[in-house]
Each structure stands twice: as C-alpha cells, then as structure tokens.
Length: 629
Image (cartoon, rainbow, N blue to C red; front, side, top):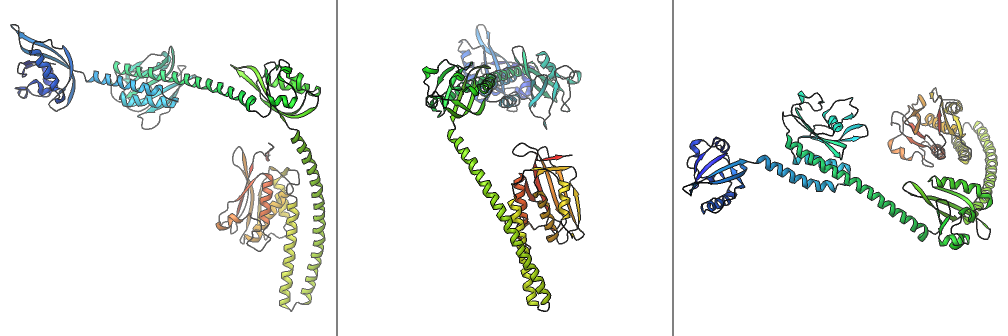
C-alpha cells in the first residue's frame, strides 16, 4: 500500500491497495491528512518522524506504527518512508506501508510459546505436560481441535485432547495395518499439512465435518515419542507458519518430557542414596539390636555395639571372618547355608533360630537379613539379631498356662454338664407334679393359672440350659466342611409340627467350613419364623455367589417381617419381643463370628424376614470357607 504526502501532511496521491485498506471512498479521502490514518497513541511519533525529514536530517527508513481505518479498527503496519525532492528540496514524502497483522500474531505466538516453555519445564508429571501443551495449542496458537498422541510400545493412542464435544478415545497400531495421518507422522517422523482431507487417502474421520489437518512429530533425536495433531472444519486452515509454530511447541514438549525423565531419575537416585544412608544409620547408630554388615561373601565388615554385647566379640576379633564361623552352632550350619542362598539372590528373610555366643552358650534370636543392592548387584548384606530369650520363656509359660486352662475348662464342662443334667431331672419332677395338680384341681382356675406360669418358667429354664450348652461349645470344635443342604434338612426334622409351612432348601452342592453348631443356627432361625412370623407360609434357604471373594448364604420367610426400629437390637444379648429367653439370635451372631462371617437382617417389614450371611472366600489361615460342587 502506498501514499504520497505533501509538506502540510495532506494526502496528495494514493494507490488502490491503500484505498481498500482504509475503507474510504475517493471523495472521502480528499483533504485527509496522513495522521487521520494513524492510531492516536502513535501520532506524536509519526509527526516527529515527519518533521525530522523536513529538517533534512536522515530519516529512519523503516518503523512500525498502528494504523486506523474508517471503522476505527487498529491495524499493525510497517512503514517505509522516503522523501520526494525537487531541485534538492523535499516537497513531499512517499510512504509505503504494509499490514503486519500475521507477523505480529506470529511474534506474539512465539513469545507466548516461550512463556509456556518455562511452565512446561517446571511440570511435575506427564499429565501436566499434556495439559500445558494443549493449553498452548488452543490459547496461544488458536487451534480449535487439538490432540496429544503418545507412542506406547507398538500402539499409538490419544492421551489428552481439547475442543471435541466429547472424549474421542483412539488407539492405533504402528504396524501399518490401519491408516491415519497421525500414524504416518509417527512412523516417518515428518510433519504433514493436509489442506483438504477429502483428497488425502490416509485421513481417518473422527469428528464429522473436519476438512483440514496438521500433525507434527514429538521427537528426541531420531526417536518419535508422539504427535501433536490439530484439525479444522475449514479448508486450507493451516499453513507453513502454523506448522513451524506447532513444531516449536513440540520441541518445548520434548524438552519438558526429557527434563521430567531426568528429574525422576535424579530423584530416584537421590532417594536411593538417602535410604541407604538412613538404613546404615538406623542399623548401626540407632538400632537397639545386634547388627552385622558383611560383604557379598558373608565376611564381616562391621558390627555394632549391641552385637558385641550379645555375642561377646569385638570388631577386631571377627572382622574379615565368615559370619557362620562366628555365631552359627554346628547343628544350624545347614540352615545358615540355606539362608545365605536366599540372601545371595537378593531376598530378604525373617526367621526365628538359635545362634552361639563367644562363651559357647546358645541364645534364641529373631534373625532379619536384607541384601545391599547397587546397580542390580548384591554387594553386601545387613543382618540383625534380636534376643528373644525372654519371649521364648514367656511362650513356654503361656503354653503351660494354656494346658492348665484346658484342664480347668474340661472340669467346668463336666461339672456344668452334671449340673444341667441334675437340674433337668429336678425340673422334670416339677413339671410332672404340676401336671398331676392340674388334673386334681381342674376346677380351680386361679391355681391352674399359677401352675401354668410354673410350667412356663420351667420351659424357659430348660431353654437357658440349652443355650448354655450350645454357648459352651462355641469355638471348641475343629471346623470341618459341612453339607449345607443336609444340615438344613436336619434342622427342619427337629420340628414335629411346622404348621404346614413349606420349607425350600436350595443349598444343593454347597459345603462350608463350620462345626456342629451350624444345625443350631438354622434351627434357631426356623424356630423364630414359626413363633413370630404369624402369617409365615414359606421358608427358603439359598446361596448366591456375589463375586470372586465372597458368597451370600440367605435365610428368608414370608411372615410379617421385622420392624425397622427393632433391627439394630436383634442380635443383642437378652433381646426378645415374644417373652422368650432372648438368646436365640444372640447365639446365631456368636456362631457366625466364630466362623468369620457377618450376618445382617435385610428383610422388608410386612413382607418377611431375611437374614443374609456373608462368607469370605478364605479364612484367616488361608483355607477355603466354602466349596461348590
């Protein structure tokens, strides 16, 4: 664009490009001064340059200003000025100016990318690198649809993206079996601009309506780590400047990834050194147990003061000698050699054993040993010996005490059994006499009521004895596998009168680890349904496999159910709503706890009771709690 300005600063002539850029008509341009087309903030600068020319000092050839068009829009311009002279006297100025919006945008983008590069180099994770890079692609470079691809072994996948209406997961093989512009860039390591994807056979449509695509590699040397990809719904949306800017951003991302990898390596190395230092300080400076440091062949390098106190040796006496020659008694040599084989493989171990003191006395110890590994090589070992003499003594005393306790419990069981048997006999006598009195005094209602109360009290006492007998057996028997279907049937058979209630037993093929109290558990549940279900017509026992680590054993009826307010009290000792002992459900809870299960009432009030027992796949000893056949 060009204009000719007279000495007074008025437009004398202009070309068509200037007219188009200004937005004015020829009529409107008449009488305009050059400053009318300059941003107000830059007019002082232009006026100074203009006056400088007419003072006949050398004028700067090129400078930048902000121009103004008819709409008042500001346009960045590069001004090239030269005087027009006649007979040696300047009579005007010829101004050539070009719009530099794109160049300014490019420069701003470069500057912003440099700012982002600082943030990228401070990133503490790959996720942060993805986020910052995509922020730059959108906010700085102005790309609407942006993807960050990374190569993982033989596949190529999107790790983050922006602009798409919903996440667009994509995973592509790098073996050439599938097309894709990004795949091509990943394989060749070269950038690709596609101005019209409809004419490109490598294009794979993701978002409908895409017409242009630009992809650049993320490379370290000759190795491609990933691809930055942008798309547009416009034709010819990307040019070489866009490619250059995106490649610059990709280089910043590579630097950030490399810095992150190095930082992680340094952090890990520093942590390893710190941990090693702490280990030695802990074992030798602060460790209250006897500790020894050996080389890879188990020759002693150092011992701590506690080692000297426990075994009676000084460092001078043992340094350079094999640890087994110093503290291992003859009968434990084979065991020690086996321990050494473990340690040589880089294994850590903890064992209770016996070691020998300098004076020949044996001492029980808890031995803990760990390898010292540097660059995948075992270069030494650390071992600690804890004197467990007092612990062994306490274990022996505990064993003796438990044996005495077993004898006492046996006596209590015998006495308890005899007592219950004797009292039951007496209660039978009371029941028999009450029956005879009721026959003799059939006409005396008051006496009959009292005798009835007496019989109920006797029945309650018998039930308490039954509970005591069952409670006494809790945890006393070894748990073995019980056929649940058979056990449920046995519990059902104990009821002479079931009031035509149908019992459905769907436990075929299930065996569970339990004892003889399993039958008592089902008996108590059935007894509750018969007594308190009121409208119970059906009982069902079944199981459900809920996952890989548990099974549900379910007992349910179709009675009146249990009110919500009562559910928290169900398994409490002595709780009852029907005048019973209140020990039936309490005993069930205790049986379940012994088995390592949980139980919960999950029924719906008004529709029936449901007791759900959750059985873990394995018990604390790692044995299977149930088996399905």
